[in-house]
Image (cartoon, rainbow over all chains, first blue to last red; front, side, top):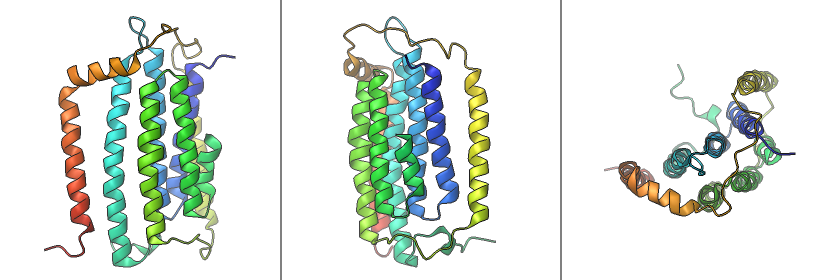
Length: 106
Length: 154
């Protein structure tokens, strides 16, 4: 059995949905952050699958893979800043639970 | 890979969650290799499974997070989350069914694919400006992290 584009898109969609459910269900801010990373990776998988599917001149369409490269770079920067914010939050409040951090709640 | 992704959400212990995410990312890298995206797969292992997840584990152990057991599990939140998950996935599945040529096998590639060469060439020709912008972004991020981790701001 050969895998088709549909299979990869399905896996990518499932991974995104799992990450999305994690963001909704979990209350630990670090786990929420990890689930965000998972959603970014799901998008990467569908980009690479489309890049492989649209072959030009016998080569994959590398524009999609370039986009993935930039997404990975930006995600790395985002993780660094986000974790610094979480550490600052933990120092100020002593918690990483989103329910304990509700000063902005109306 | 999807099983480990579920384990990230289900595990109560943050360390176990992070380690499951590492395994999930390695599985994803294997999928990238299957799609002949060798460079992206390598970057995935090096940057995500390596650097990013080590950073996560480092922070989890630095903050000394315990497994969350004291909280009662909120049933309505659980049901709401699962409903949103199911609705989202059903919608997505309907859309994927409409992708043209989705059932065709992937086109064949030449035996020897100079993946890194092609990506590097494209990176320094067509995508030169975004590449430099990303470099500035990384600089800004590292300066921002240093500012954020200062104990008191002047």
